Length: 372
Image 1 (tube, rainbow, N blue to C red):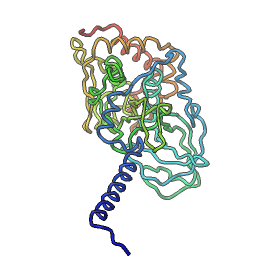
Image 2: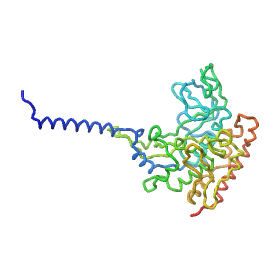
Image 3: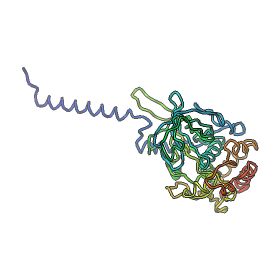
Image 4: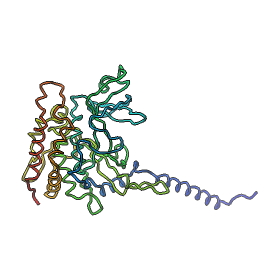
């Protein structure tokens, strides 16, 4: 039996190592959009869009986005309680709608997000900005605690939540998983129109719209980097790429009030008294918008808006019909927002008062001029 020469043995080892490295490279290369490297993430941010054209007057703000799994306003929904740990600071629980649709349910009459999230997301959506869909519904929860957020036992045969909200994500694929999918408003400076990203006017319009609704809880976890489904490409090696990265504003619950996160559950969310009195401009001469930062890692605070950005949003807001504006406050039920203390109900406004406040804030944008 002939023995291989030392040179041949070394060559064989080298070939084996090379094959192993190539295989490892193929495995690494075949990662999905849910496992982007930091450089890939930045590249997608540079090319990301934040707005797309819609026919604003035709958007049905009462019915909302017609996504898969959409619900009609105040539709009766029966689900089975799912004892899953939920994050955040406001009442919510996981529930399974047969056969296997797991949904997040926000509830409790004094939870301002149940009302504000509906109004804010419908407004962003109607103007062409990507965001979650929030559907106001009546939920019958089977095998459910009476107050799942506070106490998981005992379980009751059924519990009815007369006013609740079920969340659906927009029809996009989230580009990266976990914490890496977050983006802060302060990262919008990376977006490059020359590389196919949103224009500076569109980015400033989004910032001004955030100030318009008083989106104070704008930490990075409340925005997601996504990709339009038709923009996802998968090659034979399993490599996923995105032709249409999208910046999604994913949590608009602390809106239509005024104040910092520490006050979100008392004055900062779904509060006519505060929202109607909050100025639109903190420094009108510089076009610095009024938007207090919260104490939990704010990424957008008192943004300075360009004249192009102001005009862009003014044009969109001007296309809303009076019926659409009224519809925002009717479908969200903001006038009937509950409070833990009965005396706090004087913070609510009627539909007519909310509509008048909307017009007044819109006028502060439309009638203003920013430095060129």
